[in-house]
Amino acid sequence: MDFRVDRYGDWVFPKTILHPDDMARFGVKEYAHFNKYYQLKYAIASQIKPKTIVEIGVRAGYSAYAFLQACPEAIYYGFDNNAGLDGGCKGLRYYDWACKLLDSYKVTIVNDLDSQSVTRLPIDFAPYLMHIDGSHSFEGCMHDLNLAKSHKAAFILVDDVDYIDTVEEAVDVFLKENTDLKHLYIGDFRGQCLMWR
Image 1: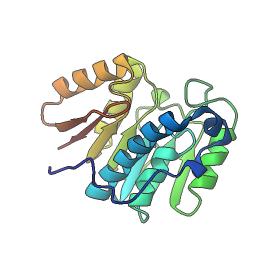
Image 2: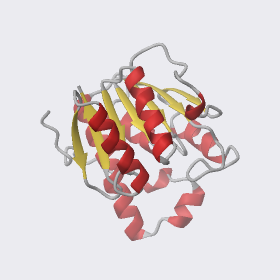
Image 3: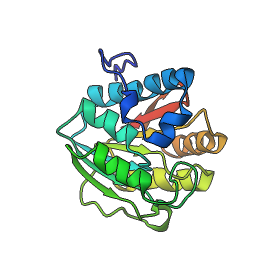
């Protein structure tokens, strides 16, 4: 796969779409990092051109926005358990924001599904791109990776590989257990790993 991390043209992650809580948090330096981070997601989607996208861990919808900006005709399903842990802050403020942000696309967001509690997601298709950004524990990430495998996702993108040790460990183990998968490690603000057959 001839993938290039700089293939996002003039697209930038607009600061104006940040949730007000995040707007207060992101300074100029942090925004510059996050801009590159979401440009990478845009670049991935623009090159693999997924017709279907499934995401575990939606939060405020920023990754989904980047993917769908690159592939506006794609069908997107997002799953989040809205449990008050890490990014999935308790209450509906991020869910409502994601719904508003993604309103013009073909989007379904399920905000009360814990991926850890299921062996299959409620979808009846094989996702072309599956984005893993839910539980960041070793066991949780492994579970979500195996969900992606069981759904026969063509491409799997795992977030936070450099940022959280347990995610890196899960990715390493999963790749050792699935030697048929090709993969590309992308060192950026938080580190990402793209896998495909």
